[in-house]
Length: 348
Image 1 (cartoon, rainbow, N blue to C red):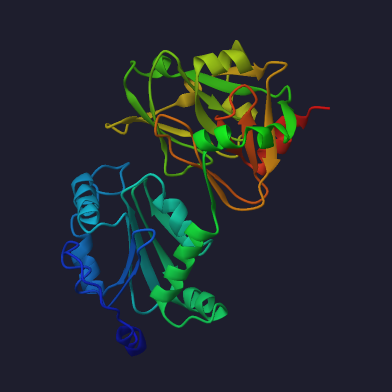
Image 2: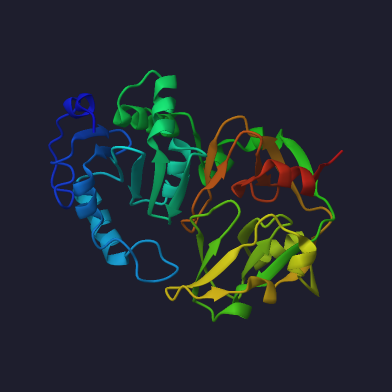
C-alpha cells in the first residue's frame, strides 16, 4: 500500500464489522444514500476476514455460516453493501457483499471491473482479482489517484446511471406510453419447456443458472410452474396459464446437440445442490399465432424488477429490448438484443 493512499484514510465511526474490518481499515468510505461501505484493508486483515469463508461443498462458493454472519453484521451497521479491497503488488482483490437481491454481486463487480478479472460468487457475495497495472491505467484515465475513490465513483455511477423500473408500478402508471410502443409477434421458432414436477416433487426448490443471470434464479416446483428454454439458452420460469396462452405444446424431445445453444443452463436442487440434466425432461413448443408483446430498444443500462413473488431483476444493456406482454402490462422483462432480433418480428 502506498503511503499516499494510507494518508487518505477517512474517519468512519460505526460498530464492528467482524474482525474490526471497519475500525481498522486503512481507508474507509461510505455512500450513505445507497448504504454502501467501501474499505481498503491489509492482506493480513483480509486473511482474518476471510477465515472460514470457503465452502466445503463442491458446488458452493461461500460457507453458509460465514456468509450469514457477514450479512448480519451488515444489517447491524445499517448498510446493505460492503466492498472490500486489498493487495499490494501484482494484483488487487475485491470482495463485494450484498444482503439484498436488488443488487447481484457478480453483476456489480462486472460493472466495476469489466473484462479485466475472473469473478466468482453467488447471489449474495462475489470476488475478483484484477491486475494492479490495469486498474492503475483505468484510474489514470479518470484522473483519480486512490483506489477507493475510483471504485466509489464507479459504484455511484452504477446506481446513478442505471434506470430502475418496478414492473407493477410502471405498467400501471405508463399504460398509454406502453401501448404506443411497436408491437411484435414471435416468429415460428422452436422453444423448449420443462414441467418442474417432472423433475422433482412439488414444493422442492430449484436453482437455475441462465444466460442472463449467472448468479442463479430460485424456482419452486409446482404443477403450474414450467421452465422455458430459448434458442440461445435463455431461461425463465412461466406459469401454466401464460404458457397455454402463448405456446403450442408438443412431445418432441429437445436435442441439445441439434439446438446448438450459446449457453446450456445449469439446474440444481436446493439445498443439496445436486445437478439435474434439464435436457432429459425438455420438449419442444412453438409460439401461438396472436401472442404478441410491446417492445422498445433500450438506450441505457436498465434493471427491471418483476411484479410479485420477489423475483430477481432483469438486467438490460443498451441494444437490448424491454418487452411488455400485451395482455398484462405489468409483465415486463428484458430480451437480449440478438435474441430479440432472431425470435421476434414487427407486426405490420
